[in-house]
Image (cartoon, rainbow, N blue to C red):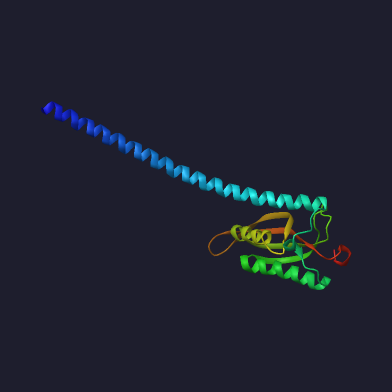
Amino acid sequence: MMGQLRQVFGLCLIAAIVFVVVLATTSWSRARLAAAEAEAERLVQQETAMLDRLEDAQGLEAGQIAMPPNYLWPGQERAALEIAFQQALVDAAETTEVRLISFGPGRAPDAISTSALGYEVEVEGGHEELARFLRVIEFHEPQLGYSYLWIRQQANVQDNAGKAFVAARIGVWGFTEQPEDTIAP
């Protein structure tokens, strides 16, 4: 009788161990699956947004659709348009805590066939601040773009926290409603 009781107890113990192992394995797998599904959903949303932007750009090249309103700097007098553009750059520098060293006239990339206004901007700050500045430019409305970026490590320049500084020269531009001959080069 004692032998049978041991066998039943042993079988119950084996069943319990198998149950715990299966439960642990499946819950771990379910967590990985949920994380993978969330990442896939994020990538699908990102792909959809990129395809929408590509479709807009292809339509613009083919002349099928008008320029989206958030891409254009509104039509104003040339001086007011330039001041608004410059103010956007100053605000971006202040928001991201980079130091605006200078800016002067620049150009949009040569491949742009639409009216555009451009400036060359020089800033300096930490790596993180510069990254935030570029992000503000990229997501600004009306749209801003940059055609080139030149970065140089500042020799022996650090802030109080010991972070190294960089200097950057950036070609920033935006589409305008003004014909290009009314905008200063």
